Image 1: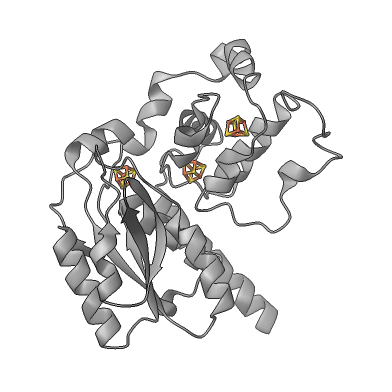
Image 2: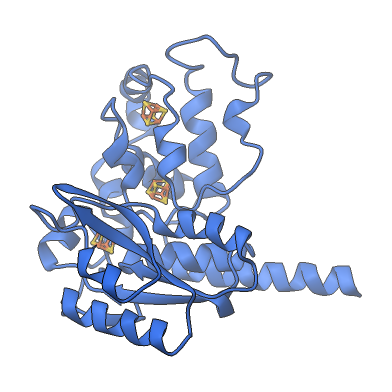
Length: 269
Ligand code: SF4
Ligand code: SF4
Ligand code: SF4
């Protein structure tokens, strides 16, 4: 699978279609994001499956956004799994990345990872390598159906009290893109308090991710949370409460794009 990706990227570089490819590089036992600009460098490419599938995942789309900001007229390739491609769609929809200047290079996740993540589409449309598995039917809603938010409010508030306000959930999120973050708004969330204002801190983030239909349920926030707060489940529950459970993130991205076009038209007109 890795060889197919390497060859595909080498071709893109040789044909001058991309200035660089944002993927993962293995150095010794470490795996991290890297912008590959030559064919030789691709020998160190990693897909992030070091010991187990998906055990080294990074918000590459979010990193690409910073690179694209610095090189606005250049095109870049980016390594994507199914959820990364969903994040890309979200970032295209809000004009944080330009669709014409990003070439996704995708690979499929194995069924066990889809099961672990309750993922309904464990492969990207821009598939270059890997075998497509069907995903978990109803996965976009599955965790939410096992838990209860309103019925177990006190238990959730106790869980929220474990938060150490590290901002890891926000920083890792591929679709958290605001320059001025409400979670740093001292009038709403006073500084110097651990745990942060409960439930304001966690529910504000939940509403931002769900209310604006941003969350693509990659689960990175939940994986990095040092307090083991089940954030993805929380967002799915909030999504159900605000009545968005029937709409997939792809559908939401299309909705957002349509809204964006309408707004653009109105501004022009
Ligand atoms: S959420 Fe889906 S696409 Fe993303 S890593 Fe998990 S199984 Fe793969
Ligand atoms: S699951 Fe977490 S990290 Fe992934 S998009 Fe949703 S809020 Fe962001
Ligand atoms: S990652 Fe966990 S502990 Fe850190 S701010 Fe987010 S919820 Fe709180």
